[in-house]
Image 1 (cartoon, rainbow, N blue to C red):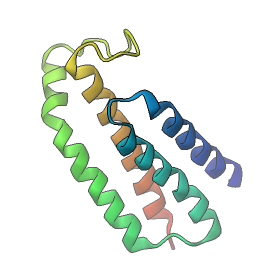
Image 2 (tube, helix red, strand yellow; image 1 turned 45 degrees about the vertical axis):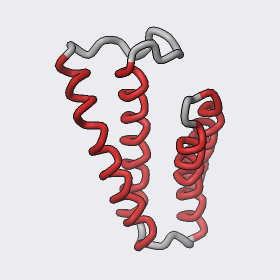
Image 3 (spheres, rainbow, N blue to C red; image 1 turned 120 degrees about the horizontal axis):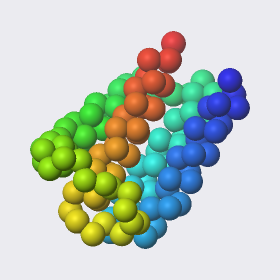
Length: 116
C-alpha cells in the first residue's frame, strides 16, 4: 500500500512539473505539489483533518466555478480537448483545468476519509 501512496505523490509531482508552460503556472504548480504532499503526510501519520477538510472544501468550491464553462462545453457537443497541447479555443483550457481540479478534489477527499 505504501507503494500506491508513493506513486500518487510522484504522479502529482509530475503534474506540477508539466505545468511550467501553462498560462498560470504558479497556481497549478502549487496546487499539484500540495496534493503530492498529502499521501506522504498520510504515510507519516501527520495529516491534519481540519486542514485537509478546508482544502477539500476549497477544491470543491473552486471546481464549482468551472461548472458553467463545463456545461457550455457539453452543450457544444463535447468537442475534443486533446487535439493539441495548445489551448486553441477557450473551452480546451477550462475543461482541462476543471478535470485537474476534480482529480485533486478526489485525491484530497479520499485521504480525508482515510484519516483516523
